[in-house]
Image (cartoon, rainbow, N blue to C red):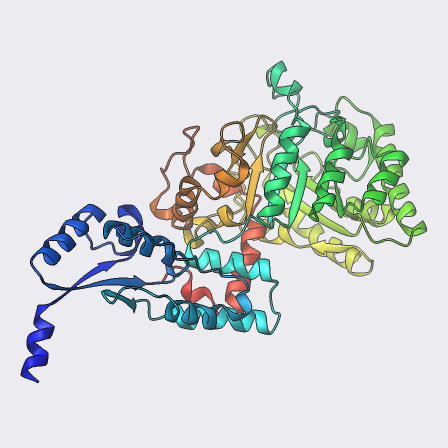
Length: 509
């Protein structure tokens, strides 16, 4: 016993948590030592013939990068090695495979593993069960795990791509094309080149992105390459949708998108009558409204003839003071055109459209109409997406806020779910103007998997402590726009999944 104690006294343990100083300190915040400091300590102990153990502390935040940590340490020992990475896929067996992975590593005797995160194995076990019971898809499960482990294991669920900045309407609520908002001529001429587009889609397919949304700062059908873009997306096995005002949705276009297997068409129609449409779209008239209704009805008829469900027609209605009285009429039109889904949004107020601000009376009228709208849809085949209920519950009339302090309370996880790529190649972190980089300098995949993007994701998750973090264009991580975020339904759905599967306890703990 005395001899054992003497040996133990001579044993020195040096802990590593990351593969460089930054990641090491992130995972063990009490550490004041750099990687170089630890190397000096190891050299000193070894030179003085001390018994040394290199211990890798394993947590949910580093279990997936054991190879990087081990290879880095062995490089200090001048040992040539290439420890293979642990692959989280298939998630179905992630816990069992990780344990076998550790046991199968043929490392020098001075290495030791210490699972310092007592919840790690429990967490991996839960994710095995999620897949065993097929509660979530493989890709969605990987995204949920990524949020909890603060690591990107897969591409975003959704990429929004600007196809062009040209538009054939001038909706009064539009941030780019309203009569009160003038951009430069060069801005309006901008469009995404097909070559750049293909590179993005190639990366998206490799990253297992679910959906490509062709929308942006204008009408996608005004980009002559739109049909080619849809065709290329579908050739890569991805889902595709495009946003349109419906004016150019001709029979020829409708037949082509059905033929290509487009998944969804989202039509923005902020009116329930031609008269209101003309008020909101000064450059158009009531006949244009009738044309949109006819085009959508024709698309539905063409689908029926071929006995096809896709593309699903999703109607979106932005609500403000000029149309707040027509929610019921909008619902009736949605049913008339054969829509599959309907969504209402309170408009996003900014200095260019403050004249559309909802009054208390407007808001009261909206609240009275929503239950009627819900009942109308319930008696039809149109699914009513209830995102407007969240906005109503959190609405502040004076400021036009509708997501309140949602992000300060929960954190922002959009960086794991979504990217927005402008026609000029800027990659935006969210639906607001927060630039991460540009595809002219790095590929989309390089940006998405970069340390820079990863850092923004984690900072956004703890947004209450990182509000002033700056993006590439000097835009802060948090500002008033976050109180009017249109991505909250996507994030709220994830939080509900985490709660339903008893995973919230791992979210920030």
